Length: 301
Image (cartoon, rainbow, N blue to C red; front, side, top):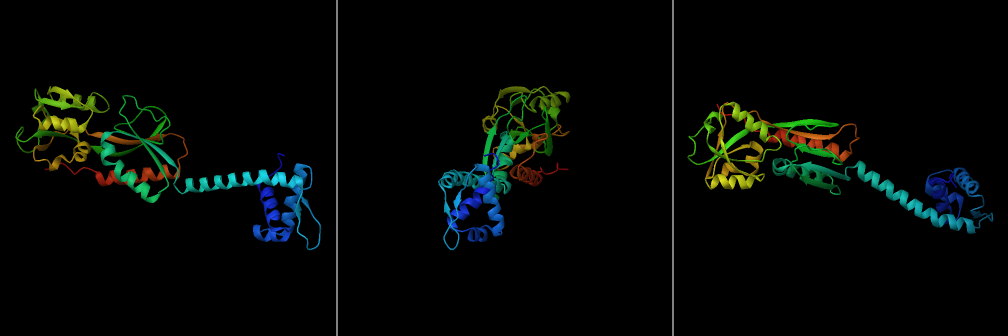
């Protein structure tokens, strides 16, 4: 039975339904001799005749053995057709993609990325997970956004530099840029010491400033609410500020830090050596385009 092939079963079904080898050949796009050869190969594989051949104008008829094989063969042919359909959908970009992300990317880059993927591939299955661990891993993810390069066997693409800016209540600082040294002793609300936050705080410390961290939260809206409440100012990356639409809030002011603190770097990662699906390849292209369009404006003179 290991010699039975799907093409043999397709020929069996066509002959049984058409009643003749000639009509089956026309339906399948083969010559009649090719169909005869496939039926003969099937009969050799199963060890018996699958058709009674009365000759003349009478239609061929399935033998009892042929009926058994056709019953199971139709199931196999249906599964093969479903497999072919699934592969076609996968190649067309309608498979599944799992993306790891973090807060700023979720607000600024993911919405247009998801919208465009769904517009282009309505049948695709997009799974998102948001986390900001100290030691991120690709695991089973197809793509992972992270503010920095990750360890392990992963390839990466830098999407953009995300500069740090100072968000303060109106009148807390004079209009215009603020030197990081001015933050010495100033109350700040800040992210927890994960991801790029320690590096940013160390850069401020190198300027000679020791801000007073009065509150930490991983939620951007919470930090901005505390700034509005007068609890302190916040040093946040541009993507976080843009995603919260701080510029439209007349209770807050955005100040450049000058000299600038080294920006946060946003990377997209995927497993090294893994063959990417068409959907993943397209997601990388769209993420690159979105990040390019999101590039922050240059510092003011």
